[in-house]
Image (cartoon, rainbow, N blue to C red; front, side, top):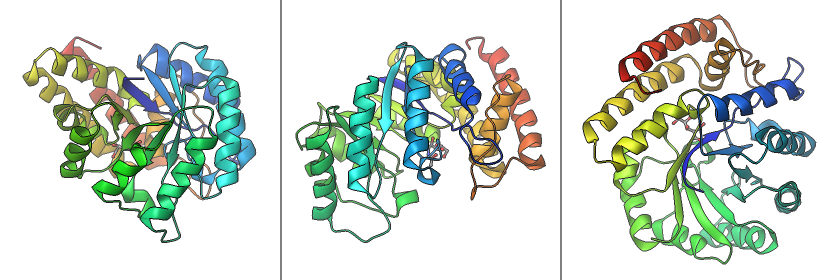
Length: 297
Ligand code: MN9
């Protein structure tokens, strides 16, 4: 449960139905081409918060079958509905996932004690160990150091997916909790997070450049910081172009150029349009020049 994990993209048809072939192809591309160490399934990148419980189960099952036990698997089961969290934790445990992860509950302004109670209820009911998912930019939920620390010290909570640029907070958490797994969530900050001794990273761009992130991590651990900075720079060029055109649509369109039919996004997210297709072509050409230059990927 260390290293580079893709926050797996979802694959849907124009009616919003799960695209089974697309999911299968995405999983194989992540494992075969991007060589990721693991998959983080039904997170933000998987459009999880637009899905019915049935669609979530369908994706958990399809992804698990396509991965054939070759990589570590984390199931994001967090939701504002505690009964659903527990049902999905039990479901993914039966499928054979390695861990579950749960986003902080959002929308209602819950107190820190209520959020801790949410994690306590999931962790005590879940057959699988739990990784808390902190992403204040999307949930609007900001937690203080002591509150996150208390959550991570709950029984059966083994780690944190930290998608925040608050590296003051990240350093405090790492120092206080040396035995917990901490995954960095912003792909553009991977090198900075490695300097604070994270155990790995979970990100959306790893669906297309996970192999770059793996190479960055190896360079960092071998002490080649010049190389690590160079790879981070290339990752950041890709990230900024993808963000400018539209994150999930552009990522899917890049995978299409690698013969992965990742379908479209699920409404109310917009479909893939010309702007994403043009950006994908331009980014893929850039990726190829980088890979020739690095001679590594
Ligand atoms: O899983 C991802 N966050 C979201 C983490 O999708 C909201 C990141 O990988 C970002 O997409 C990426 C670009 O900012 O770092």
